[in-house]
Picture 1 (cartoon, helix red, strand yellow):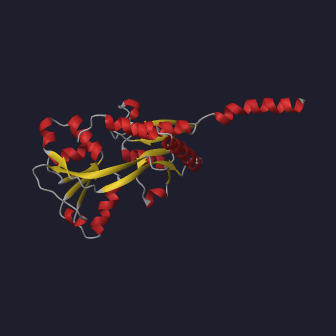
Picture 2 (cartoon, helix red, strand yellow):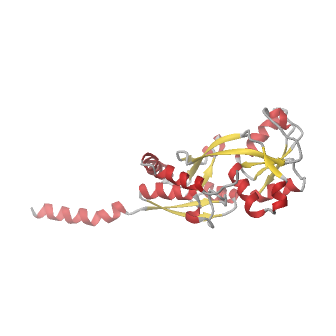
Picture 3 (cartoon, one colour):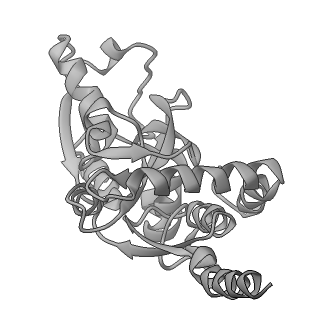
Length: 254
């Protein structure tokens, strides 16, 4: 009996250690209306990541940097991971991918008074396209160049810089997440500037986004597996969809 009591005390002492949440630091960039330190709950994508992490007993801390810097910090293992990236074979060498947290639609924005239509990559021949620095679109358009499509590629560190370059006729098209660029148009451009821009309805890509866990971190695989369990639970019990329903009820531009 005495031995059983001693073991019972030992288990009680171990319980706090067994249930203590693991701390994970994720690097992110600003991507309103989906991710931003200035939004309620830091945006719906951040809210989903936090809900999944809490369900999995993970303690998430976010740090905000330029997107290319967020990638580098996680790649080097200075941060445990980074948020909201599409899959590429090159990135998979440095990161362990979570299940998809969101699927984005990227479209071409252009001047309303300049006719633009496209259905095949060849329709982009001769056009200058602005893309985000380090985004998957850089690789995709570079591959088009190698295949013989004469598309001009210009990279921008900030999403709003693409739109200003478009307004100033420095590029012909600005490629990006439809909701993100519409949000920038609505919140940062004048009414006159906003009237000058529109987008083509046909998406250039529809892409799942993930949390990337650094392979430089010893627990990276365990963190990814644990996070995925929490993410699957909030998808099953409706909390994941509830976040998106609330987001879509907001008055976003059409």
